[in-house]
Length: 318
Ligand code: NDP
Image (cartoon, rainbow, N blue to C red):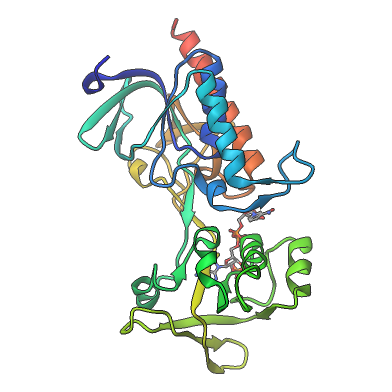
């Protein structure tokens, strides 16, 4: 079939843990799923380091390796992976229409596994220095921080993980958290506190990134919310680890989203518009999960979505 009038049984949006698990299941059901890889192929696992809590890997597994293995597994059973990004979805009638660049792909079932993307502070100076010392990906940019003093922003597990990872390169890591208490798990927090290269600042926010004129991060201006003190920290790199935003923009008006833009799901993976379920469309992984956000839960809902898609197609006599 030419790509101009492509009609699929199953299209999966996103190639992270949820999307690839859905692809493995759908492919094994002979649905020949098409996986649209999106802007961040492999999802968040592809830019993480050691995953220590994925069952079956007693010594842990590198995120990119886990994703690469999932891809191979999906392709082995007949999934097709394509580098493409959805701009608009028309879900009001079946087959659903997916606008991908100039092309429209039609599909009988759609599994949305588009994940979530890293959040930024939103300071103009921060935005101006992205790629010039400001980064949201320690795995990608950590190497460039070799021999430098750096800052990590955040108080969750991601911030701890990134701070620990970055001690491999940086001479000193200052972890800056806006609150008194940390969201990070105890084990990660204890490891971070115990690390000799890491210093932690609580109740502290970044007010400005310095070095915009020079196009190179020279330092960050900090404000201590408790003492009111303003200070400057001379760092060459600032890594953001302050959570994620769901990638569901393309579905605004097409699906029910919650106040933060996550896709609302019912019975795990069923989606709706104005409270009415849309048969044949499912969401899984971080785009619909603000509570657990784990690789294993993303994989679990990916599996559920594929099983529901298969059931739906079977009921349709396909
Ligand atoms: P979290 O939502 O857990 O934490 C985000 C952190 O960023 C919070 O401390 C929050 O502060 C802070 N923050 C949010 N917005 C801002 C802002 N505008 N300015 C300053 N600080 C801000 O996100 P994570 O990415 O850390 O973790 C997400 C999930 O993934 C969690 O469930 C976590 O357990 C899991 N995870 C597990 C890992 C592992 O087990 N190896 C590794 C990484 C993540 P505040 O607390 O004040 O709201």
